[in-house]
Amino acid sequence: MNFIDLNIQQERIYDNLIQSIKAVLAHGKYIMGPEVEILETRLAEYVNTKFCIATSSGTDSLLISMMALGLGKGDEVITTPFTFFSTVETILILGAKPVFIDIDYRTFNIDTNLIEAAINKNTKLIMPVSLYGQCADMDKINDIAKRYNLAVIEDAAQSFGAVYKEKRSCSLSTFGCTSFFPSKPLGGYGDSGAIFTNDETLAEKVKRIRVHGQDSRYNHSLLGVNGRMDTLQAAVILEKFKIFKDEIKKRAVVACNYNKLFSDYNIETPYVEEFNTSVFAQYTLRVQNRNLFMKNMALKGIPCMVHYPKLASQQDVFEKESCNLKNSIRASKEVVSIPMHPYLTFEEQKFIVSCFVESLVVS
Image 1 (cartoon, rainbow, N blue to C red):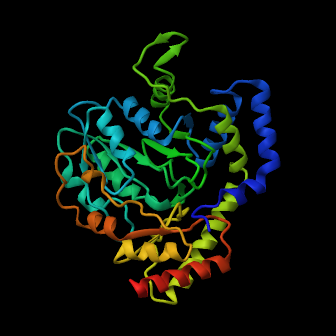
Image 2: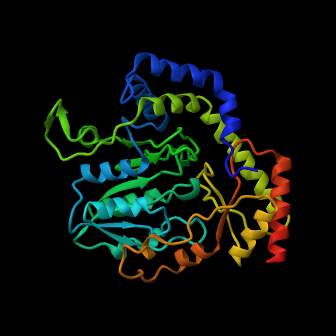
Image 3: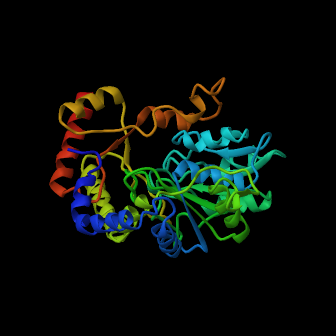
């Protein structure tokens, strides 16, 4: 059994996928070719933002957005420690300081009640992470940001397609940044990402930064990076995007099935706020004695993953662990993600859940 099964999806779109790839091979514009612009237009329409700028990765999306905001040495960014390290890595690359806020125990997203107390004269940005496919409480975050004249970047690497109060993830703040890494709900066959904004001035800066800061060929008006999207990735994502809405519905069915099956055993299922939908980039539960549990699951042929076993604040690049992160620390020791993709059958889910319960009993 696969944790994520991309082969079934590929079989569904194979013929059109091959034709799209052949079209790129025929015109030979392998970087920022016409498919990239088409993808940007369609994604912006879907998210309902004025601008979408395709990039080389979700990480570069975050980095470029912060560069466009002028983030630098001495600035502070309020964010969560319970995330993949790229969220924090990009802050450090620019010489800024991440300020870690604990998570909400139920959603695993940043605890908005703790943000305001962390703001000081050096704070320039709030960067929540929409973890596991569900948006953070962006209205509260935006209200705080407005009062203190701060920018907000939604790290939406796992939540593209999710809805928050009838608005889509990536349309909720100064910038929305997502990833099209192959395992994401909408993924390519390599690294790529996108930045979304409604601010024309910032969008133009992002476009320049993406191509080494150029405003015209060989004229560099800004310090930039090589953050361009490969055309082949755009072609792949365009084909996957055609079935994306259907796959989100299928993910919801799979999650609903899991919820029902686990509830029969009184096992706590993922909590989704009533004003949110989740795209369930992961289906994540809590267990005790996790190492033994995962060994038991592996013996039964069920792959599991941990997102994330070590907090960003605990990584070796920091001199010491941040304080007051009890929910984040607890989550890092308990969370486990089980197979989740649109094409899981109900029989497969029943088998996974039965193995899960048996592994818990043994542990």
